[in-house]
Length: 317
Image 1 (cartoon, helix red, strand yellow):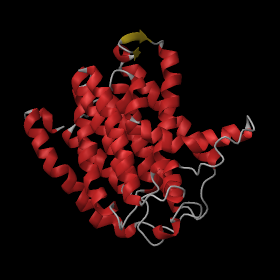
Image 2 (cartoon, one colour):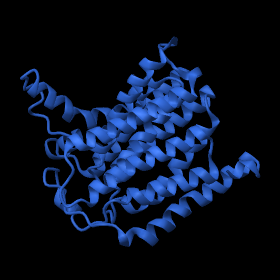
Image 3 (spheres, rainbow, N blue to C red):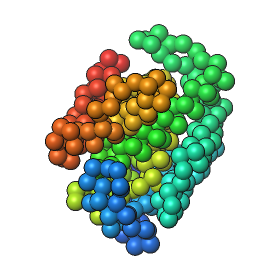
Image 4 (cartoon, rainbow, N blue to C red):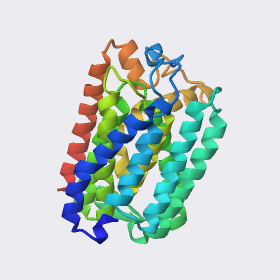
């Protein structure tokens, strides 16, 4: 919005200062109204989360949307994305506040609706970006097929990012590595300057939350934050000009978050016990079975993702 009145480079300078300050102020002002975590029964060291502020994702997401409206884009396409990100956050927040956790079917249907809406919105406004690239060979994708594949991508990332939110600072730090990677690709491909600004705004907004979420953390984003991050990450992947880049640029998130679903499918459908010795999500396996500390998990997983991202972006230069 400010770009209508001020040169874009000055808007970015203002955003660098104001976006994190806004998030920090909102976290301080409204965190006292959020529920407290009861601990996670099946997670490694899940009892350590008990008593911490939970559901900070509602403040994080609202801060991001306000900053996006001020410093990034207000175009109809992006306005729809903001609404869908908000709805994804709201579903997670209501689940966080619920005395009884929502069932998987209920959350799955909500996620599917939001995912389909995001994919349809992207296809409607980005007819020129409906392609995927295999080793430099671009293939145009039929809009209907892209909606279906885009829905799968959004739904998958919502759940994968949600699964990574099990260690203080892990989800937001790992997501930041992926966001920086997508920002680099969008800048190289020059697909959408508005999305580049928006990705930077998301990174700026995450910083004050990470300040509070670093070990020993005082607040958790909960499903409210992780689901919103998953939606935004999928949008960034599609806006990069090649949605398949989500595979390398979110590789660790996919592996860490989806190995649990893979394990269930192998057991229930194929009656295979090949992954029985692996604890899910994978970061719990690293802590419990490998003896890694939380800090080692965060650094090592982020290093792996950074190396994969650097290699991927490097091949595009």
